[in-house]
Amino acid sequence: MAPSVPPSSAPPTWPSPSPPSNEGSGGNPQPIAAVSASPGPSEPAPPTRTPVVRGELVVLLDPGVTPPQKRESPAPSYPLVAVQRNSQGIVELRLLVDENGQVAEVEVVKPVELLTDAAIKAVKRWTFYPARKDGVPVKVWIAQPVEFRLTR
Image (cartoon, rainbow, N blue to C red; front, top):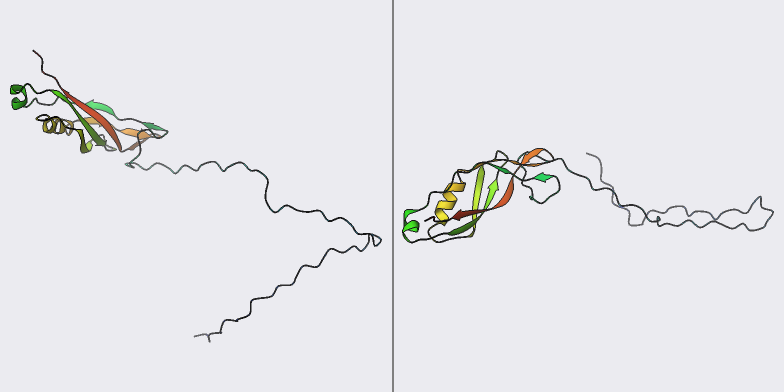
């Protein structure tokens, strides 16, 4: 083991720069040009883009993102009790569509009594062509209304 050396309490000293010489100018003082320490206006560096990773969660409105497209979307089953009570309306959902086009998660934004569960059950069976960012399949949240309308 190397012996330890106690740290010096005195700060290091550096030679001070010598003033410019006026030699060779005939003893006449020469002007010294001032150099600005701050750079002039510069252009901002262009933003760097990190490569997109397959399955990465992105925001649908980000540049370079194409939304998922429905592949199969079977209609929901109308609950019998909702038909008997003449219940209709639009259930508003948010779907997390994964990089394979499957519905990975469902969130209820606006429920409709007697119809919400049927809407959730239906969208979980839906498949999509996945969203893409710069050509790479990614995950995105989308808004998805599910309408229940009785016909006479």
